[in-house]
Structures are given as C-alpha cells and as structure tokens.
Image 1 (tube, helix red, strand yellow):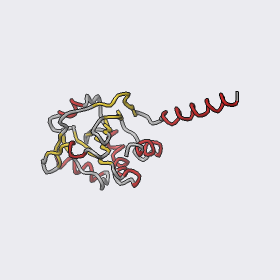
Image 2 (cartoon, one colour):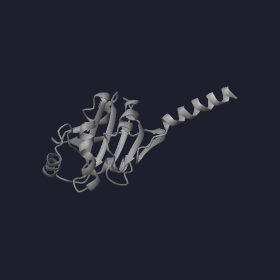
Image 3 (tube, rainbow, N blue to C red):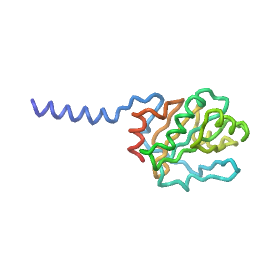
Image 4 (tube, rainbow, N blue to C red):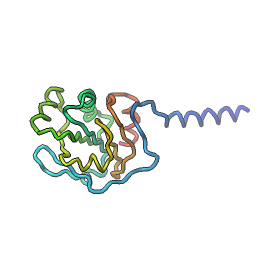
Length: 169
C-alpha cells in the first residue's frame, strides 16, 4: 500500500509539472513545421527565420490599433532582456498594415526599448500561421518548429510562463 501511495505521488507530481495555468497558452501535441518564413525590418530588409535556427524564437503578431497588443507589449519588451532566456529572439511583427512612423510612435509611447519592429505587410505570415486574432504569439523551438502559441494577450513577466519557457531555451 505504501509503495502504491509513493507511486501515485510521483505520477501526480510529474503530471503537475506539465499542467500550466497560463491563460491563452496552447501547447501543441505535435510540432508544426513551416516553410519560408520571412518578414521585413524597419529598413525594408528581408528577415529569414532560417537564420535563427538554434535560437528559441517568439513571433508576436500585433497592430497599433489593437488594445490587447498595447497592454502586453511592455512585458514583451522586458522578456527580451530576461537573463534566464538568453537564447530567446523576439520578433514583434506588425500585421496591422501600419506605417513605420505610426509603429515607431506606438513603441515610443509605450517606452519600448529592447525590441525592434518588423512588418508583414502582405499578411503572408498571418495566413501561414492561420492567425485568428491579435495579438497572437507563436513559439518556435531551436529547430524552427512551432511547439506552442498564445492567442490573446498575456503578461510576459509571469513567473510561471518564464519558468516554463526557460525549459526550451
């Protein structure tokens, strides 16, 4: 009987580690692969995600008119400089077809200091990733495969989220 109780304790604890209480986070049962993920930086230079294999990548799709995007962007800015996630590369990608000036003003008003602005003007990535709303965050492992996504805003400073994400770093 004592052995059975110990066994149940270990099993329940191992499942407890996998159960996350992070709103809007969906962990994929199977990894998803995408081809040719490219977007543009503020200088209209093409950024190719293949160049970032080996890094944990976070793609955050946003727009200046999106209130939840505005709410989460400051915590996303702090996530970029989190010392526990030194292999994390964040790409905030504007899909709202906002021009550079409006996007820069958005970042300035929110005091965003650690992130750069990227654009998906043709909405090609929004279509590839089947976005259903903004903000949406796609998490890619070191092999460039999607392992999770966040639909809607979250607090990227959440300790449980950072602890969970650091397992993939």
